[in-house]
Image 1 (spheres, rainbow, N blue to C red):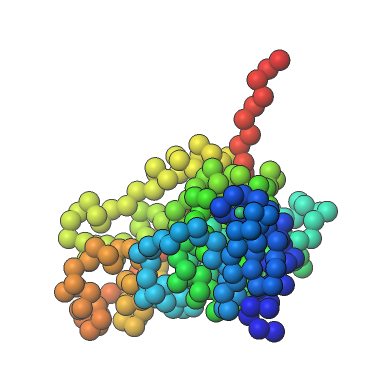
Image 2 (cartoon, protein in one colour):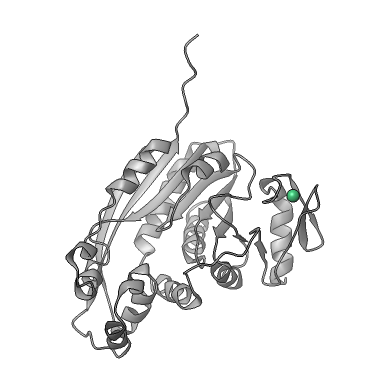
Length: 303
Ligand SMILES: [Zn+2]
């Protein structure tokens, strides 16, 4: 089956999740386009993804950075946290006996590797039906995702204005990506779960220590992110995962290029990395915190 036909089939079976990004009306699938009642029209790309942005957006996440992310993901740098996220999902859905189909949205999915790996893990461990939906503002990222991982719904959109109807998702994952908790709450089912992965203070510390010459840039604190999350979600599980990963000189290049850290590294250092002049950098620390949160409901005022 062609990628565009597979995507059409998936979108047709999940049409009720979409709303028009312009006027918020429900959408219909006509040919290879999503059309709302007011006739705002969005075409499916040949690669099988939807572009639901209402205006072009410049993203700093260029092709090089996205390709590097894919390489690092394929080398298994994040396999451990991927499996832990999968285990949280499996535990969560065990209690939902009447349901066999679950929609998982990766909000800020980049080039799609994380969502694809999590779904592969879930399919290997659980008999249920999982529908993966990846959303990112980077068209470049979604294009790589739909080319590499067909069988999921890939959407270019702004996560601060998600083109989805309220309460459609069982799980929202948000890995090393910005968030919009109001939107996440709106589109998550009342019984749904948000899983957010954030870096800890030791994350890629070898890189920061070697290439950041100002002390304050070498340190990272995630306290503010957690405080903000707690205002919108009731944190039900919290796990810190720290491990060291062996690093070859070939892996150092994509590792540097995949993170925004590389934007502030000077040109000379980056050239040296490409020329493999850092043989002493043999390992790197991965320090991540995996948070899971349920929706907080406002109490009704007492009568
Ligand atoms: Zn519309």
